[in-house]
Image 1 (spheres, rainbow, N blue to C red):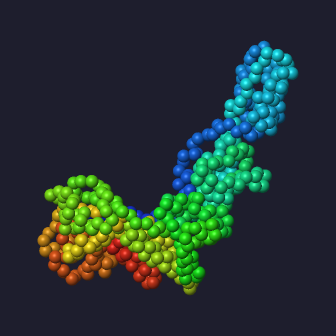
Image 2 (cartoon, rainbow, N blue to C red):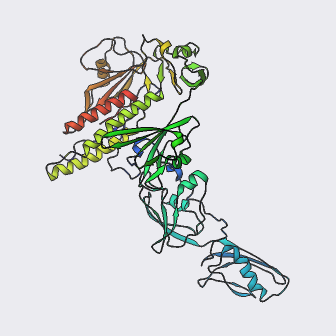
Image 3 (cartoon, rainbow, N blue to C red):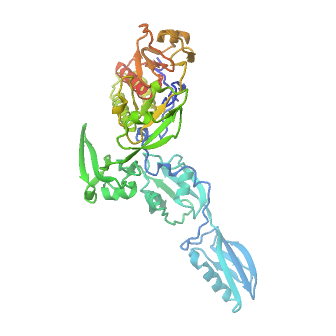
Length: 539
């Protein structure tokens, strides 16, 4: 047995559109370094989007008064009055420039601010009066700098001695999110650290230290050591790197920018499998410290007078409205201007808090699966090799599954009292368009969109698409109603009236592995994702 199973991944983010799916093959190659475990949660590291190629294609001819003239620099010299001369003079290997009728002027190691005075001094020795001098660095010495450590592409990169560390890091593809430090970057010269750089200073205040690179310098990005997760009432809900083992909450606040509504914070830590949570008022931010791996969540106690509600789909009117807090779904629906094609029976409601709860549940299941992958003990070397290959594929599945974003649909039934459904900030109301089509997707021979036929069962629609395909999981056939409700259907039951116009039928894949424990967990995750997002995870 060469391989236990092959993963194919196809996601349909159903959201506020009719259900369907697109099949994509998941690469069998191991994950790249960028796909770190922290990235898989969906939250970014602060500064992660800094290196997008915006620095690498520029050269920085900036004036630095402390720059020391080096071999290869080009000095623009203009002399007029009793003697006229204009020329661009290179600094030779001995650190000199040569000016006709003046002679040799030694500039190696002279600060940029002093080159005019240095040249004037040499000119005055020949021409006593009525001679004026202007001098400037026209072109700085081209150099090559090594970039090493936790960057995408370690290598040797060319640039100018006045270029910033941002340009060289960008040429190397940037710092690997979740692996490299943004706050402890080192510049080495002759095996010694000559400069330490904290990129958070640039991200927050735009400050970049002027530094003169030399040929052969090394920019080293060390591994990320200490970081925390920040969430809640903040402008920047990211992972943040700590400058040391511990930092006060106040130190962190200058980077995360809490909203004006925040008045307290909660720190969550873990001791073994036990979760410990403590709440503090914002006034204690100077005294309370956070350390590596903690979750810092800012909370607010404010009452919103109004809510922003999005209205999408088949209707006439605005795409977003503001309503008083406490408004019900019924109050909004009765004011919407519908069209003749609006399907008012299957109106959908999407809620951010529900999406977050669904996401947390899926991530918890993925965490359990990941733990089981690395706790399976092989009994033979051959089995160990198979387990290793299988583990790589499972990890690819986990990474891809973490990227699924649930839509947070609140299922509305025909007998629900919509006056009791109170809207929340950020809710989305979607009015679908009437449809006479039934979509069949997933593990069928010919995925199709079929015209609705009264009396047809799920089995009839599957047969019309050529029947089940290889590796179809016949125990997990889902009917996604036009309202968004997901029903599990048992093939062969011949339930009459189980499919209506606008519904979709999803046939999930079976898991081809002899590890029954992993197969059960993966199947359950696929099912939960399908319910939460109407996304098909094909295995």
